Amino acid sequence: MPATPMSKAEREPGHAHNQASRVFDLSVHSLRELNQALHKLTPGSNETAWEVLNPKGSHSVAVGVDQPVSIDVRGSVGYYCAGMNDGAAITVHGSAGPGVGENMMSGSIVIKGDASQYAGATGRGGLLVIEGNASSRCGISMKGIDIVVHGNIGHMSAFMAQSGNLVVLGDAGDALGDSIYEARLFVRGKVESLGADCIAKEMRSEHIELLQALLDKAGVTGVKASEFKRYGSARKLYNFNIDNADAY
Amino acid sequence: MCGIVGLFLKDKALEPKLGAMLSEMLVSLSDRGPDSAGIAIYGAATGNEAKITVQSPKPDRDFRGLDAELAKAISAPVSVAVKSTHAVIRTTPDKVDAAREALQTLRPDIRIMGAGEAVEIYKEVGLPEAVVDRFDVRAMTGTHGIGHTRMATESAVTTMGAHPFSTGADQCLVHNGSLSNHNNVRRELIRDGMTFETENDTEVAAAYLSNRMAHGKNLGEALEGALSDLDGFFTFVVGTKNGFGVVRDPIACKPAVMAETDQYVAFGSEYRALTKLPGIDNARVWEPEPATVYFWEH
Image (cartoon, rainbow over all chains, first blue to last red):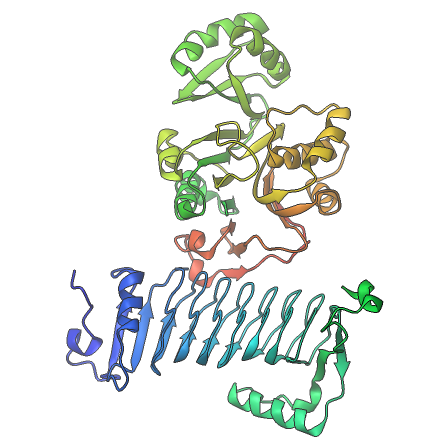
């Protein structure tokens, strides 16, 4: 087995489609080979398009990529896909297990299916789009990431969310935004319940503008920013105050 | 951690492959728990035969001549099929309690893994691959089954501490998580006549469900009760003679994914466990909701 797989162009010289693309079949090559090849990328590399075949629920697919390449993963992935992404455009043509896009710095991640628990947890930047549903703890402790979920999100989402935007076209589960700091939450459907110190807030023109820009960026069409409600921090729990003891 | 799997077949054509499919699912989750592994497989109940799965630390000594001695003690036909450290004792359904009692005297070191008309349970310390090979699980046929690979947190790594746990006829349970009120619940169940083999938290969950069902609840109702009476982290997969159920605690930290096609309903701690099932690419795949009971029956 070669240490690094041949590019699609090398393997199939007559292949006209995207000569620059490099195909990694995880039923042939190991996950470590894939991630090391991605980590070896340097600025200005010609290998700007990657395709990953047969992920079959593998953990940690395409973690720690720090170059602006595009990566298409054909199938469903397990834990921690695309974690720490810093600049790549990663698309999963399937569903993602727990912790997708954890601590993303920049770039984009698109999940064509559903995402499991704590999608986008602690993310500091970039855009995470989930075209299906996300389950519990979506955007937990988010710190600047933008997350757009086409479907619903589960309970305890945006727990201790510090900054960034969480946009939900469907419904939100119990205890949305519990102990939230300065992240903005936009929900189009119903919210099962709000967590401690999270309140509904007025949608002012600047929020409509911001939300519309996010929807456009995420490729969402046929949905108006005015259909959403905004939720955020009541700012009562930032510092301990004995009068608020019941709220903790 | 811990890895759990379940497979409930709708298509009879798959029944000869149940053991192979379930084994494949369990082995794929080996890195979720290397301590011990176990599997419960349900074959079709005939109504005129009961099975008791037993385990012995010294199978050569304990299983030799057991069929004749037990048959004499309970005055009924008995067969004993030995598989490594386990054996399946077959007799008539009305003689199960008598056989349990006789075994205590005839073979005091034997432990009962489970009993019923349909279920056989095999569990041992070791990796799933080794356990599956030891008991030739891949060759087993059946209608549904559950499996577990354990990373121990609440009690010792022993055969008896391995899952599945069975506390009632044809009932068994596998668990990913840990219960925090198991000592209290165990005390209450002991007062109600239940008996326990281990200090394990999962055995308490299994006994809780058996106890509820003994009080007339169906599997779904028993699982609903577990949501209010058991405190802690859990994803449970439960097998009964005809059915298969799943429930997760309201916090739902412990992972779970399910798939359904016209041929089967499958459960795995992770999607990895489901990837080799037939037709998985077109299956309906979803994450079971927290605090929601799912069950299927034949």
